[in-house]
Length: 182
Image (cartoon, rainbow, N blue to C red; front, side, top):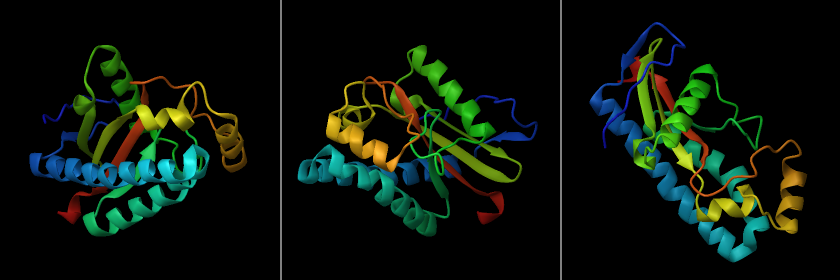
């Protein structure tokens, strides 16, 4: 999978992400998604969409923490329409990359191409887009069941992460770690 680079204009000290570091970042994202998605699907099947909201609320941060400890990458999920404003607000660099992902998606880029990595101010930074798909629509779509909407309102009173359609950019998984770590 090629690493697509672009200048964000956020910082003058940008450098391409070294190929081995980019590969490690992609592997870490794959590990996160590879564990999170099956867990979410199984919980939706077992508890229904409203019951599975807790998976994204508690299990995703726990998985991020666990993978951070084993991989050395700080792992977060960010979005320009966050559900959890304590965890998902992008910083300036992440917001710029999200805007680029949106433009590239509009221009026909496929999901695997929607990634970006670079070295900024002594840190490796990497993001992989998350597009809206099947199970996501249960809690992030345009037509959300009343019990799900009620559970979302109770857990996330300032939720802005709804109204999506299949294939839209939901956000991204964002990784970072100091260059000195490798």
